[in-house]
Length: 329
Image 1 (tube, one colour):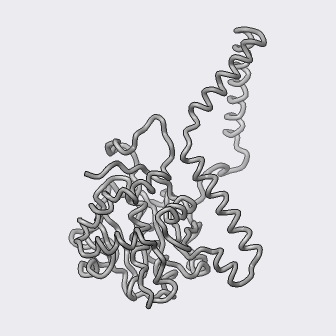
Image 2: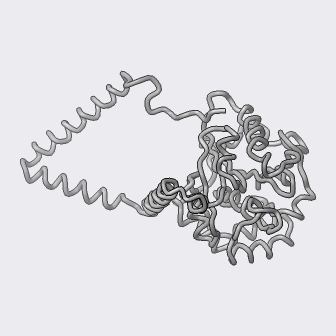
Image 3: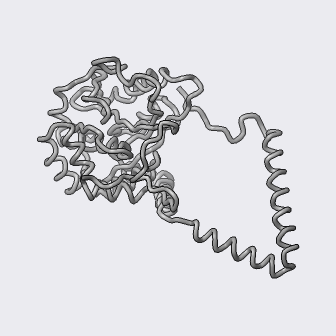
């Protein structure tokens, strides 16, 4: 029986250090803000992409015995790592492993081989002889993978997501992977019965081919739906910076890593107790200043300031201010 899995964010820093903690060497994630193939190609070598989207609970996820795009390749499961998703909240880690565990071919060039570390290498060797559904169970029951995954979940004192039941009233989101393997572009989605082939694809063609597939997928949604996220799994950009002697790029990437580590540390902490103590201290100070009258005046002043801020926002400090940015096609 597998233990619980928490939800993790679709964030480059989270995924980069998740792999790092699993023992993977020289790999990072970069967020893509558009579907421009050139933006992806510039990150060469690219191992694959992870796509987050709203799961279509109100529409078919496949067309009968075939996917909505591409074709099922049932035989491919024997040659590449593909696992059925068998547990809630694990799809983010499962998607990145779907790319990573298919990049172990030393003869395939720099974009086809990653040092995945001893632990994941042993896991891959153990699971490759199993059918997809048992690979999914093996992943769900891996204490190492589950513990590393959960270490990047946001701390919440009020919600135990490992015990949360699905609620149809909430929007559901799902991670899937796209990666070229043996000359074919595959979509690896643990909720589908098999890998989905999107045709022939070389490593050089991957940026343009995968963007075409993603554009078709996004086009199936209402034009108002903008909740998508795209992360590229690439070689550590600090390696390129050192190879070409780009001091500015190296410094920028080192700062990025420091920021990621700080943000990941914040995710692990529960600040409710701290905030409560600060509030108690402020209230005590106000009561000491002038008793209940000073406290009531302080609360009223804060309420008025908040109302003023809300009114200013409604008036609009610029059309579209504070709104989400739509991914560009």
